[in-house]
Image 1 (spheres, each protein chain N blue to C red):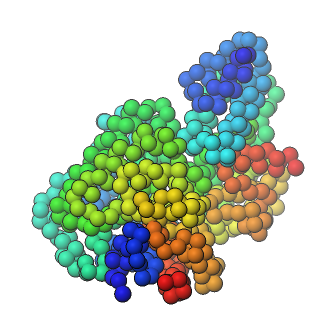
Image 2 (cartoon, rainbow over the protein chains, first blue to last red):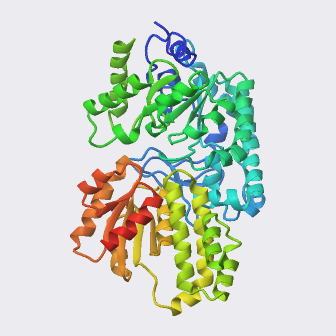
Amino acid sequence: MLTKRQNLLETIRGGNPDRFVNQYEAFDCSPSSPFGMLMGDPISAASAMPAPGGAPAKDAWGVTRAWPANVPGAFPVHDEAHKVLKDIAKWEKIVKAPTLDYPQSEWDKYKPKIAEVDKNEVFVTLFGAPGIFEQIHYLMGMDDSLIAFYEEPEAMKELINYVTEWKLGYAKLLCDNFAPEVIFQHDDWGSHRSSFLSPDMFEEFFLEPYKKWYGYYKGRGVQLVVHHNDAYSANLVPFMIEMKMDIWQGCVSTNNVPELIKKYGSKISFMGDIDNGLVDRGDWNQELVAKHVRRACEENGKHYFIPCITQGGKGAVFDGVYDAITVEIEKMSKEMF
Amino acid sequence: MAKIDEVKEQVIIGKTKIVPGLVQEALNEGSAAKDILQAMIDGMKIVGDRFSAGEIYVPEMLIAAKAMSKGVEVLKPMLSAEASTSLGTCIIGTVEGDLHDIGKNLVNMMIGSAGFDMVDLGVDQAPNKFIEAIKNNKNVKLVACSALLTTTLPALKKTVDAIKETGLSGFKIIVGGAPVTQKFADEIGADGYAPDAGAAAEKAKSIIAA
C-alpha cells in the first residue's frame, strides 16, 4: 500500500495510485494546528485574527476582520470607518506592509512542529492566506478594487507589486526556516458562477506576480503548490498552469471538473468537486453525501483528481460532514480500485 | 448618432468621465431628462444581460453602474422637477450572520440602475432591521434579501417569515445568493428569486408589475 504522499504523487502524475487520495489526508501534517496544516510563524503571530464567534480584530496590515459564529472563515470589514485604503492614488502613503524583521530565536520557536511531521507519510505543508488578489481587496473593499482595475490601472499594478514583493520576502523566510514541501495558498478568484476578472484582466494584473511568487517557491525546493480557490475559474486554468500551480483545490462543480481533467489533467490536478453548498448543510445525511461523492469519483476518475470538500481546509461547517465524505471516498476506493 | 444614444453606448462600456458631459450635451440637444435616464436604464439592462450570459465580468458591470450614476448626478436637478420616474423603493441587505457583500452590492447597483430608489442596509442584518426599513421608508415596493452560506439559509427563511408575520403589504420579497435556488425561494415563501445581478434587475421590474 502506498503512503499518503506516494499515492498523491501517483495520482497527480498519472501513475498508479492504489486508492483515491482522501481529501486533505496527504497535507494533514500537524494534528494540533487548524486544518491540520502548519501555520505558525513570527509574522502571522503578530497579526491579530478574530476567533470564530468572537470580536473583530485588526490584522498587521490594518484590515479589520470579523468572524461570525458558524461561518467558515473571517471576513474583512469594509464600512467607511474600517476600510484601510479609500483612494488608490494614495496607496504609498497609506499602505504599510507588516515587518518581516524578527530575530532568529522567534523563528526557532516554530521549528519543533516541523520536526514532528511524519515525512514518510505526509507532506510538510504550510498554510497561507490571504493571496495577492485577496490582500488587495481586503485593503480596499471589493467594489473599489474592481473599479480601480479600470480607473487606476498603474496604481493598482504598483500596489500589487508592493504586496508581491512583501510576499516574496515572507516566502524566503518560510523556506529558510521551515523547508516546506507543499504550499497551500488561499486566494479566491471568483463567485461560484464566474471569475471576478476577465481572463485578459487577470493575465494583465496577476499572472506575472503569481509566476514570481510560485516560481520562487519551486526554485527553493517546494514540491507542490496547492492553491485554494472555491470559485468558478475554469477560464483561468491556463494561467494556473503557467504560474506553476500543481493542484487547484476548491474547484466547485460549476467548473465542470471532468472536462477540465480531460483538457488539462496532465498539466494540473483538481481537488474538490464536492461542493460545500451541496453537502455541508444543516439537513445533511449520509445518503446525500454518498450521492455527491459517488458522482465526483465516477465522473472524474482516478488520475489528476482528488475528491474533496471544496472549502479551503480540513473540516466542514456542520459537524460530521467532513468525516462522512471521508467514509464515502473510502467506499469508492474499494469499488473503483 | 444622437447624443442620447451616445449616452447609452458610453454607459454600457463604462466611460465614467465621458458620460456626464454627454448627458449635458443630450440635454442641450433638447432631450428630456427622463428620456436620458431611460436610455441609461436601457443601457444597464444590456450590461445585466451580458453579465448573465458570461460575456462581461464584475468590473465591467461596476464601471458601467458608476458611469450611469455620474450621469444621473447631472440629471438630478431636472428629475426632481419632473414627474417621478422611480419604480419605487427597494430595501436590500444581507441576512443576519452573513458578511458577504459583493453579490448584494452588485444586485443593489443593478436594481438601482433599473429605476428603483435603493435603501442598502448592509450586511449581517437581523429581520427587525428589514422590518424597520420597510416601515420607515416611503413607497417600498421591493425587499431583496441575500445569503451566501448554507449556514445562513435559515436566517433567510427567518427574515422572510418575520416580514410576512408583520402583515405589512404593498411590496414583494426577492431572495438570492449562491446556495439559494428557486425551489428554496418557493419553500420559504419568497415572491421571487434571481440567480445573478443582471437577472435580479429584470426580476425586480417584472415582479412589481405582476
